[in-house]
Image (cartoon, rainbow, N blue to C red; front, side, top):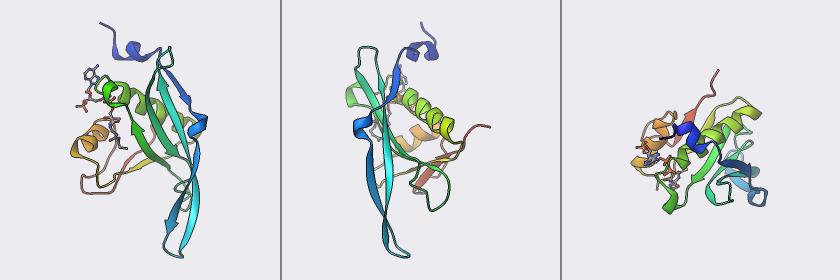
Length: 140
Ligand SMILES: CC(C)(COP(=O)(O)OP(=O)(O)OC[C@H]1O[C@@H](n2cnc3c(N)ncnc32)[C@H](O)[C@@H]1OP(=O)(O)O)[C@@H](O)C(=O)NCCC(=O)NCCS
């Protein structure tokens, strides 16, 4: 039986440039639309099978001056429960923190279920089930 770290060592984690995009968010005071960039990173097998994608932005919180925004993480249904999501999240956080050591924040949509909340909590994110955001500070 392989150790969890060994099991995932051969997976490839790389940006998917075609999915990089500009999105817009609305601010109320004063009312204005502000652009932010979202990048996408994929986790792949050696044979290029795509196992999941994580999306994040480094300038979503530009008005606050710091912080990463984790926009989404998704593993195709038939690949779930194999540990790929955990590995993808781990590598994504490491990648963000290698660029700037700032808090990573995710916004939970109304559709986010208890199970997803627990999933992130188990993987180091803080927050309450009732709050909109969850967050994780970089390691020292
Ligand atoms: C959330 C999501 C990314 C998790 O992906 P995943 O690949 O299933 O995640 P993991 O396999 O790492 O973890 C899932 C569970 O399987 C378990 N697991 C991990 N490795 C396993 C293995 N080899 N065999 C069986 N189960 C395993 C984990 O313990 C985990 O359970 P836990 O939360 O009780 O600890 C995925 O469910 C998803 O894409 N959901 C839809 C989109 C979504 O909700 N995204 C989050 C909003 S931003």
